[in-house]
Image 1 (cartoon, rainbow, N blue to C red):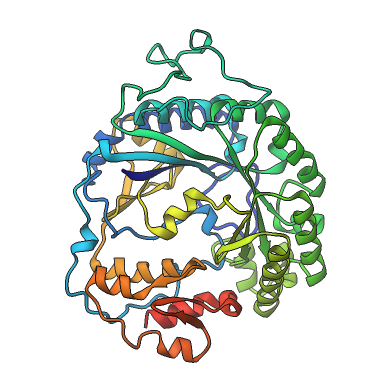
Image 2: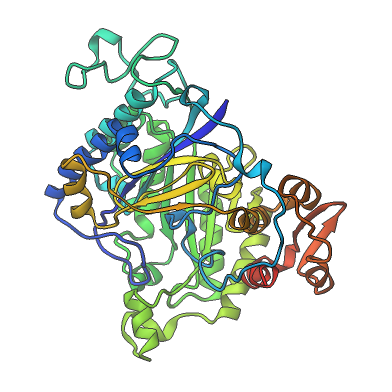
Length: 476
């Protein structure tokens, strides 16, 4: 049984951060309903829409899947988006790359991730409607592991609201629900949220709809840093929101922090890490600020201006020092460092995001959403209004479509594998891809950038903050 993730993009925010380079917009809430309807229609009609776009789905779900083109969880300092050269490996054969022919009945959906943007701006009914469409389109094995809270228990089947008369919103009983060939074995359903958007009633509704994990874009506990970055929330909102989620029944919370925000110092960064440890989220992501030239802050820096606190952005060396301090303090607080930017309490690694680094298949819905089958990748149009019009007309919104080569797959096997702290098994990659990598890692090992243990190669623990440079050198 092959596992499949579902990603839903919600490209709306209450305000745009000064450093943001994502295709998100600040729009009237009146735009939410048409957008949700379009997403639901895309989910219902995805087979037809993918065929119209020339995508072979499910095709061959093999090893040849690629890195995400753009994910919110891949915000800053992430490898693969700049400075990559072509490796000179000769791929002699590709039996492992193409994988085995796959049928829809052999796929199990195990993660759903609703990202953005700020999905928590949507009405809880919108969230519930999207999740219900996923249940219907991909089949539901019930009872599964959808969250059930004390505040919002599941009711009897006869008491449930129906979705247009098609099927109860919350099926009960065991076995697969008719309407989709997939067996859904949901383990993790994530909603991205900003602290100021959290309310008790909304949190209870999220849990009742199936959300069992919330990813918070906190970025900092310093009000001065948050204000300079254009964030809407403040430190007090964080302390108010977390107990609300816990009371509603969310037992898996992730915090995002950014190292390198304007006005950030080693002392303020240490304070943010200390406060994070006190609130004890199950998962933590730490990103180095990457100032995009298309963002407001990026343009100001390029022009040598002072707006958006451009003159108060820490240096690259300071950011590296902040990252290393996070390694030290999060480790001491009991977090396991499992990926360059991610730490987790035991058993709370992000199951959905692991799919990107392990190159497992997932389907994306919504404006700007990306998808991977194993041998192909494709992406929807980024403009939300254009996306809605396209889907409403019954046409596919796919605007990028690529069939991956064996060379691309090999490169991504290497650099995505090295993002994980467990490293890569070079011998296995050589066997799977029919290549010889002899000597490729010698210069990196000699420079102390990678460590070897038998056939396993991993980034050196003290060199994670300069991982981009390591990957660029590896791909020469």
